[in-house]
Length: 389
Image (cartoon, rainbow, N blue to C red; front, side):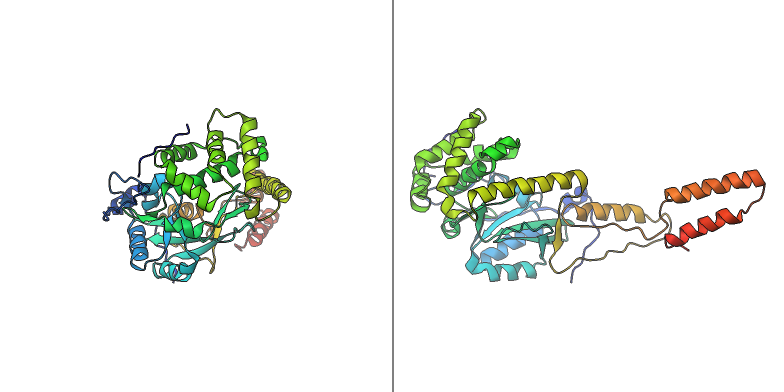
């Protein structure tokens, strides 16, 4: 429901540990609360969140070095970001990019890239390892505000510096003005869910988490501040049309109306488009087809470390738990990275081996001899082919 309120408001990977054990290493960090701006309220933080030590150190060092950044979206779930359950969605000033990257390297973060060629400009991924909890921390770093449908992200909104200028220090992260965050959220959701092709594909409704975030942001917004931000930074999206965009996100909004609003928004933002409308629609269909094929017949693309990966060898005697350790390590890393599991011991028998062994047993029973030369040759040949001769 649309509602505003007018209040002034060298790479080392330790053995992974279980989530239960990880929780025992998560600690509570309390940072002095911010002084709210007179024009908007800071994101509420009723109790100190559970914070991974690596995340706490990163935020503290960012403040010490006066690097201009903010946690630019999904701020209704800051506690999950602090605990490593969600990504860190950080918008960083391009003028501070070098100092920010240096800080990440000092804290042991590694740059990663996606395998598929859909790399979005101005967006990078870094992974850090929190040694106390055994968790990976994913920093999703934005130097530009690139928004749009997930497969193409066709619009660059040149609002990075004004967006960062509204940021205030919270209990842990710096967060933007709720009004600015609300504006970008609504634009993102209309571009993602409000076009005819997304409706055709069945992606026209907000997910549960997106609807929760919409409701959360609506409670934080001061109408006067929102109007001022639109007039100053997005004059093509006037306040009246913006209210239509918000209404189009309601669950009971007619499909035709949502499509009409989505079309109008794309027209109003065409000066910020990275490619033409028809080309972008065609590219969306092509990439969705690729994703559908990968889901059905292959594996969805994951990330690789930019400086190359690592070979992790687990050795031990029979019954020492090698298989369990390999399985757990693979499960831990493959959630984020392109990972291959290789068994270099005695593998399970193949169909060919099973067939030859069955022939040997039958021949022995028929002939009454313990060794059948012609069958043994086949068996030894099969072993040689598989590299165990």
